Image 1 (cartoon, rainbow, N blue to C red):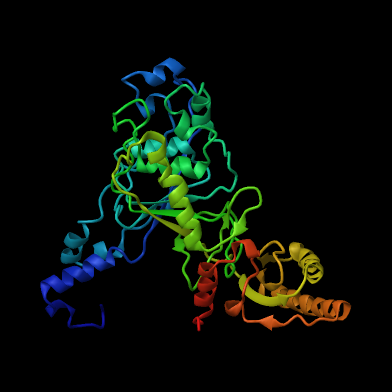
Image 2: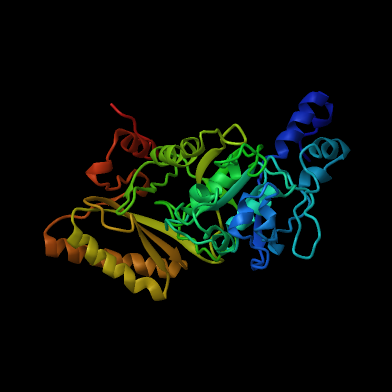
Length: 407
């Protein structure tokens, strides 16, 4: 702006489009927290079927925005009067509040993301949807455990299964499905009142944050505050687990497709009705884009490992680095012959020493097993995957990640 002197003489319509685009450049993350749940207003099983039933009558989980999420005023609002007037179509004083009672100012519900932190629960989601807070994008962690307890609501939902909520939000339903059902809303069986679980009609994007790091990123501690959210793409993919018992890794498209089928489509089979909002949001696999610790570096080394014996010897070597730096392997478990990425996070001198020790161990492994262990470029790695889940979609996604094409 300081050097582009022709901007003031651009047509007003073009200037307004530029200001509009500036409101969506850097989405901010507002993390929600809650206090301990109140257990004084839980209803009896009979009251669940009362016509006057409301969510907040039984779930009392006040929430607020974390204090660390007090952002400065967006710069687009401070440029000039024209930019301010155009940007105020999106930025507004939200109904969100901090713990001290002050309101969140300059919240863009069409761009900014609400993040359900680890202190939140299903009751927080219920209270959020029931509130007057307007939002279109939300993010939360994907918990691998099937029966993850939410203390605020499980005490209520633990009543006999004769209650009309039994098929939808009880302990027999995994946490991810619970949250998605509350966000989208539904009409419970035995009633035609869609206002009981209205959902968020303006919800557009749901970011599912993975609990483990992808193949090309460092391990992120869950205790770290979430300062940004970045979607996984073909260039920087993630291979989630799919299935029960012994889940296998698959492609992002296959995982989200299965999730849409099993979670979102299941509501129609349960109650014979569509979602209360009449539409579904877009699901994204994403990660926290937190910066590296100060002074630390991140490096990768990909090795083509032919067998479990070689993998185990190298894995034991990485365990020696726990006192000096973080060294992880992707995939974290042995899944067959293929490429494995060794990821180093620590101070540069520690990483250099660790790579030297690993190189010496590679020489030992090659001498013991009489086989070569080639070093490959991490972005050209072909990760092992069991043949039961080796489908063409998965192979195509890996080719796109390596920048190759199918012949």
